[in-house]
Image 1 (cartoon, rainbow, N blue to C red):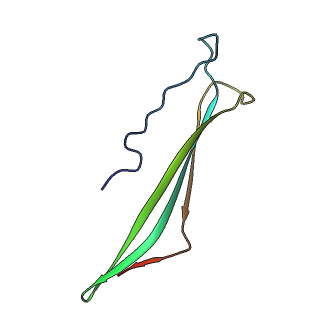
Image 2: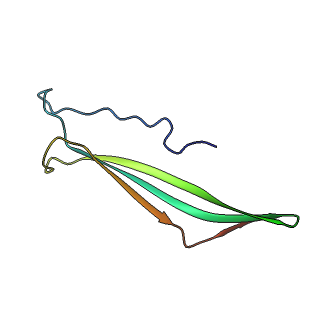
Length: 82
């Protein structure tokens, strides 16, 4: 299995003066999709995780500290794998 956040790195960006840190906000969006499949007499339940992220720079934010937000939800749709 691959971890959804593997390979993600972030480097703080600076203003044009080279000393002031640009305020930034990173949003991670994650959706868990319930799935199930049957093999013989057994029924297996699994969750597939779909994820993405975006980083924005907002000059109106107060303070240089970066903001990290996670949005997690369960999908209302269930997938049946034959």
